[in-house]
Length: 211
Image (cartoon, rainbow, N blue to C red; front, side, top):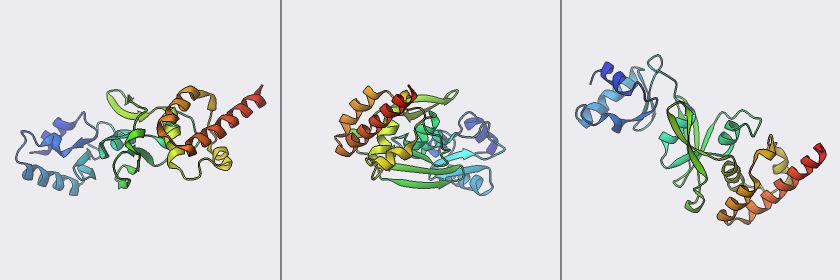
């Protein structure tokens, strides 16, 4: 396979698995050897074994970190601080893209950024939607409520007043509190219930001060 053929094949695909190229484009071994050569020559970026992106200046568009995260681990969805920052619910810039998966936890350093995958039990793997992170680029992303619940559930000490104060959600009234409580029940986690009670009190106190 020649590089112009690869460009034509993946020009509209910012992130692609090697399996995308293994049908009708030569033998499996020859395609993989060619991919390795293009990585070494700087034409391709290898994000992990079997997952690639075109390197600049061949990219039509840089791959969005959330799109990359979805490709690095399946099944997974972007959640925790990454999703909350995306929704504008926390003020901090989040340089690491964090997702949850039912598989083993993992941290990956790639040419396009750092990615963290937190393990979540299967019973709690819900509350995400498929949304377009950019036109024609669908990704799996937690809802604001589920991103918060995942964060509280997976963070040690999240049921302490000190931790809740440090979260600094902006604004807290954008959460659907009925959805939060209903989804929290599915976790069957006493710690999560305590954390939500503290957060609810904080939200009520803030509302009273603003009246």
